[in-house]
Image (cartoon, rainbow, N blue to C red; front, side):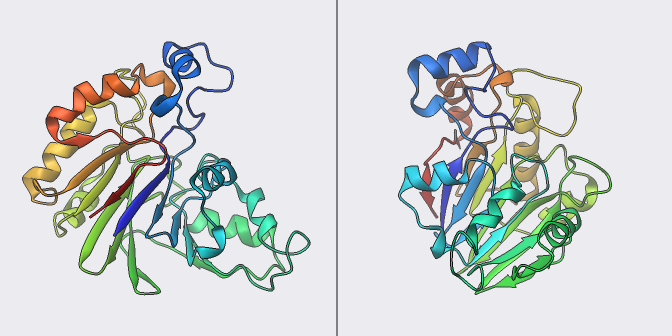
Length: 269
């Protein structure tokens, strides 16, 4: 499998639109890996994880073609992950296609939003539920319950399995509750993509991980045997408010065997 990190930033990206934080200023000045678009990824070039507001610029930057997708799998309905307006450009009057060419997978909130916004459009929408696997053209995709957002929404992280390999893509996690930990204890990961949104800036908000929480989650996964020395561990969903540049994150996490994610990173496992 190949995971392609299309975006590695938090909700407002880096540099953030109207921000004067140190991290935003650094990204504006130096560019490179410190410039982060909103979090999204592509698995094996065919399974698109989240369809956010930066999708067009991401696939253009990477030389990709959205017509290659067989599925769009959403994690949750926050606007940096779910830009519902962008779906209209797939079909008439912007194109002559009679179907999207990909199946949409999303939780209760996302499925309902698409049906209300596009009631007569030929989108194939499958409602996903935590811990209930779905099959997608030879891939097994299992949402797991994240601790993030509204209690009325079944917010997901995603286990993707294919060809004997297992990926966990986990943005907007919070500290998982025990049913999720128990479920993860039954899996061995070849690759883990895990958010580190708040980095050095510890806050009272429990829907994202700071560096201390990231390390704690990773250590528990290692104790469970879910993550081993052979697991590729990659960060994503970094906020400018996390008070960490890319190189500062590398110095903090590289000794732990963690790759700091960046826009455009591709890892085969």
